[in-house]
Amino acid sequence: MLPQLRRGALEYCVLALLRGQPRYGFDLVRELSEADGLLTSEGTIYPLLSRLRKDGLVTTTWQESDAGPPRRYYALTADGRSALERFVVDWRRFRDGVDRVLGTTPAPGPGRGRVATAAGGTDGGQVGTVTSSTGTGEQPGPGRSA
Amino acid sequence: MLPQLRRGALEYCVLALLRGQPRYGFDLVRELSEADGLLTSEGTIYPLLSRLRKDGLVTTTWQESDAGPPRRYYALTADGRSALERFVVDWRRFRDGVDRVLGTTPAPGPGRGRVATAAGGTDGGQVGTVTSSTGTGEQPGPGRSA
DNA sequence: GCGGCTACCTTGTGACGCATGGAACCGGGT
DNA sequence: ACCCGGTTCCATGCGTCACAAGGTAGCCGC
Image (cartoon, rainbow over all chains, first blue to last red):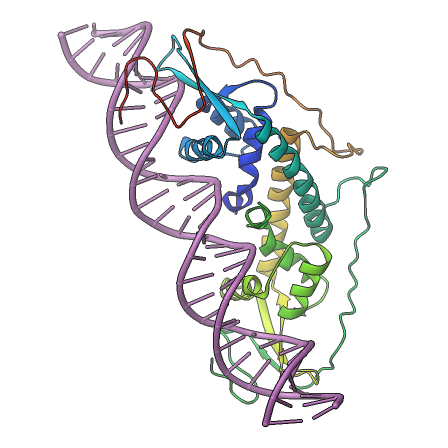
């Protein structure tokens, strides 16, 4: 389930790591996988970095290394920085929404914090017959065969 | 960017909403879209619900309504409940990881809270020549044409 | 009977994380 | 000289899943 969760966030985690100083791909892999488990393999990050470069969110500089082949260093552009800031807003909203629904709101600090809504009425129509089922999908009353 | 973020989480948000009481699809759409913006259209949730049913995480019961066609109510199974609990663990880890990297840790309440790590060393190789570039991908020194 | 609301569903598309595989540069062991 | 392992880059194919678009059918009011 985690791979799906990472979708969309990973891209901006990379941008966030680039806030401080430029980094190269292999380094980002180490940082994100070993520390946070936000990434599993190199196969993920290189296509991602290509896209960031194509979209103008990062610039790259080649630097030779005496421990292997030359490294491509990635640095944040102005566009990248503002895209990151925009994402942070979205991320907060998303995170709070999920936290609220899951009931995982950590600590309602001052300014942030909401109590669960729960206890839904959600009325509008009364019940009638009940046809319990566990299988695939039997239709009720007058058959509806889409 | 939001659609990608929702991936993986939406499924378990649905399960979480089912914790309290059974609900039907259209109701879930209203709950998740109007309140939290975690969902945009019905086209998302019905395939999702089918999958949950197929995986045995929910059971369904048909109930007639006097306000339209019969409703399919979804209820959590034991498997569904434990899958949800497992996800909550993953979600916390993922959320905290992203929060740490983004620097969006909100309110370090008692029991939870971490300070940003930042300040990367990441040494291992010295610099050499520098060939700045913004374009697609010129190779440095000895060409490497894969 | 017609339009609108409710309620269910299917199909096709696109984005993107991941596994796999490969090329090139370096150093050390034998 | 040769191979092997570590480093560093990259491309390809696949599977998952949110989404938009489109379709059927019941209920109600005009």
